[in-house]
Amino acid sequence: MIPVAIFEDNKDDGYFIDRALKGKIKEKYEIFPDPDLFLRSITMDTGVCIIDYKIEGDGRTGIDLMLEVFKINRLCKVIMMSVEVKSEDFMRSTQYGAFRILDKMSKYFEVDLVNYIRAAFGRLAIEKEIIGD
Image (tube, rainbow, N blue to C red):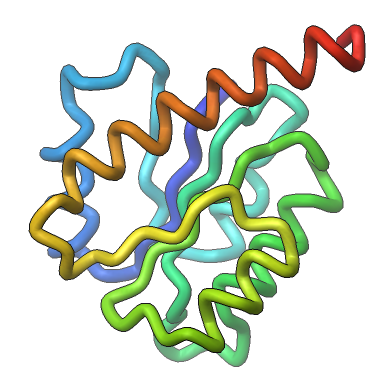
């Protein structure tokens, strides 16, 4: 069971994300450099997915991965991240159900990442309480 699944195909960014999260969130997380391996890791127990919008060498985008995640676990909170948060990408991500959009170039990236994960688990707990799961 992986409560937080992260897709990041850039090794350097993956290292940066790992450094940002280590010791700052209580949930177990894993970073996947391969989109298909990432998708195979998703279960009904996955509460938060963090997905890079751009996928190198693949015809898919992060939105495509997000939609696949929702087919597996509709309640999962997806945080999309990108180096360049364009307004059209932001709109599409939120229209398709992204919980938050994260700018990887923000000087507050690490703080926002941790806060968004915590907020996502808080929101998920409330939804499960209301739904009765």
